[in-house]
Length: 185
Image 1 (cartoon, rainbow, N blue to C red):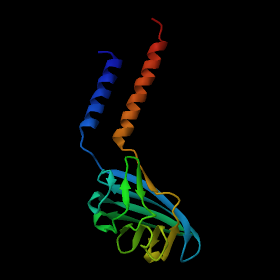
Image 2: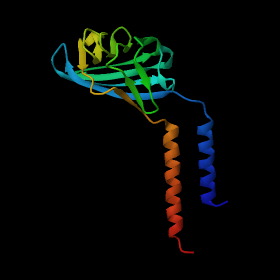
Image 3: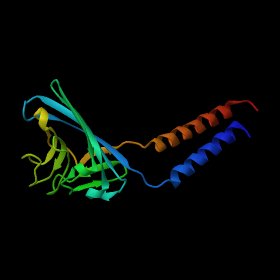
């Protein structure tokens, strides 16, 4: 069997395995930049939110957890959330590439473990007394980074390893085809 046929067979088997596997969790990643309402210093935080892979309007059972990591001045904070840390579930939906929150609606969504939090709130609801927007909070560090919404997109999906492996396999096939065409007959 030639190398080209072996690679093609491997790629076909890999694609079949990925397509046959059940829907898996989706990890979305986003960030908040704003002014810390306590110290008045600029701050930023990155976060991940993991769902069960469901699309459309999401309920509390669709969230598996997440992480938060941020800085204000020389103070760093970080935490990990579980499904039990999900609060205020309303107004959030998912596509295969984005996590969306309706800031014009009356819903709110938060991951909160008693000390650290990431929260998105709409009109008439409030994470800690803010107008519609997002907040990253660390109570033990006295940090409240608030950011007004610029769009309903709060996070983008992180490609799954299986997606990346399929892309690499396809690229390998293209390179192999190009090299094969250059060889004289």
